[in-house]
Image 1 (cartoon, rainbow, N blue to C red):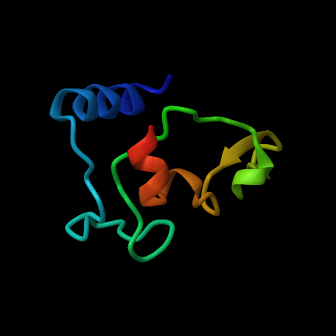
Image 2: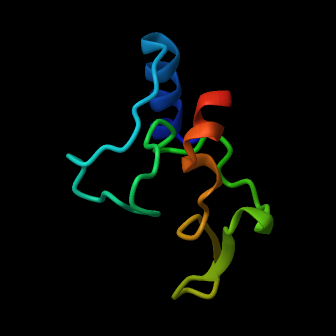
Length: 83
């Protein structure tokens, strides 16, 4: 798990509350307006599940990296709440 995802997970479990839309974030909305930002750093990254809207993209060096730019799943309030 990515260190930022781990820190976010610890904070969410400690606080025991949803973040909801974080309009103070300089990147908001990174997925869609009204998104739930509780899982800003996804604990499932890289899920490699294209059904989420995520996809493999080519890097300049010819390698691949998992992009979550079009993943909306974890940012839906009902999903964030269930997690």
